[in-house]
Image (cartoon, rainbow, N blue to C red; front, top):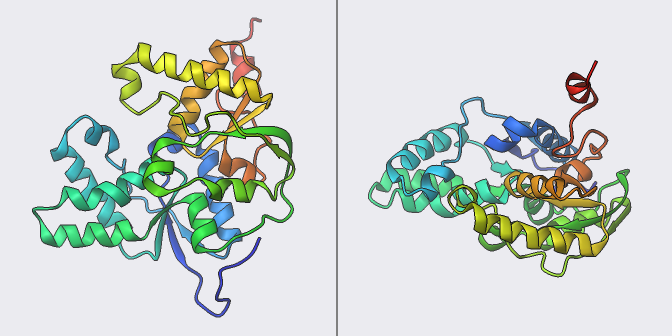
Length: 271
């Protein structure tokens, strides 16, 4: 892996925004993100005071609770050189929406803008800021396809960065879906409010995945991954689902998203 452009400069101090879904469902993604950042020469810290980015409340129109949550996040992440999230959705919330929340509070708007300006999605940070071109010694023997999450793509411009890094993974063949930029139907609270519409959207996505012949589905947002993994399982698909950070960090040996570990499978087995 290449290092930051200025070897003489002090290592960047990076705060990892873990995200709720990573914390609750896939903590290994957080460890993979830390490994990637440390291998790139960063000093990584995980602020203990971090909370949800506030996106569920924001999407539900609850500006009061969203603003209260944003204050906690801003206070926890001030003082770092960068804030990095393994999620375009949470990164987009902080970077694109936080400053507007405080339009009537100039002091807080300045603080929100300062944190927003230093916030990046993981692969974008590696490629665009740290200028990481290749990942040495990483292998994954699989045919994979990549889903572009809506927030990462449209709010943060994440498109080529994960693909550029995946090109350096030995043994990995990346094949594109016909519609990689089409929504998977998750949309946070959307999939709860409009279940039938969401199911129709994700079913079209899984058909697109199947048409590639790939055995591995990758993406950069846990919400999208959980949604697609759930539908693939209901359809009886053998496609494995993983966060892109797991493959890039060489940490894709464990169960895929939605798969039970051996111990969990044993618990449910008949005596």
